[in-house]
Image (cartoon, rainbow, N blue to C red):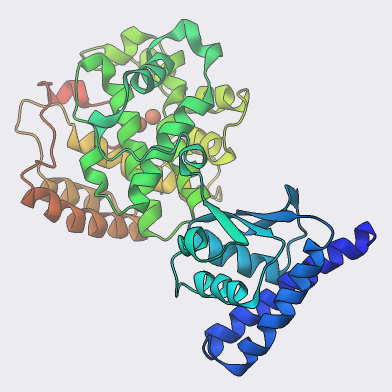
Length: 401
Ligand SMILES: [Fe+2]
Ligand SMILES: [Fe+2]
């Protein structure tokens, strides 16, 4: 058999298996159409086994590999890969001597009528292995709450935000794996509010704020039905939106009173400095760069940096403005009591159409009130305990104030 006809023979077998599987889902596995395909499948596989004692199909999500070599993706390979992947089957190995009863069991496993473990007991000529999840999920450990972040993870974020001298050594992979952990938790229907970081020491504000904005961004994107890659990028954009602050004098960032005009001018540079910095780093999603640049522009474009009125502010930026505003209001430093959710949402509604996108804000508040109810039931307060600060001190901290 030439290499070409060998490939063809593999695809023929897969086409027949796929036909049997779609007939099983249309009719039933007992249907004549399926039954008539079983001996043909056996014959084709036996043919392949006539030139080698065994061969293996490896399953990677929607792709199939034959003895380690990727097969061209067709609707048939995709269907088979998808079905076995859903049964947690990582590979299937066929041995010489395969009979029709075993082929039938193979089909029954694919459609979920039998557990894959049956390959261990009932099919001497088929064996299998499960999907190797630990490797597959490396860096994707679900992070359900802030306390679950490891010391190294915390260190990697706080180093980024706190150590100006380390600006050049930023590694996106650290941030990326933390975000992947949050995304993973969301996909398991965790309540994202549990992951919000309680406000801690004053100088850690940017650090905790960044994680919170990332989580709130992922929550919004999740509620809008974004796919996994976008959830991830929107989370990264939230985490890095204020990265330009590493270029602003710490004294200005920490200044207890209001800012002078010159200090305020410097502060206003953080979006463009951040975008410039992120552009020079490897592996940063484009969305994160745009978001860093735009996140103080406001919905009515009256923020900064100033742009022409027809500038289209990115959707991810508009979501980030909402997360940013919510977190800033939640951790508002005043002599007064911390704001509760009703007061925060009231304030956000006042900002609709001016600072915030109306549709996205309504979606956000709806999502938060639903999640918030569950949180309140569990006895956790939505507002944060914050160190006192005067109204004057607040004046120029955030445009949302
Ligand atoms: Fe900012
Ligand atoms: Fe911010």
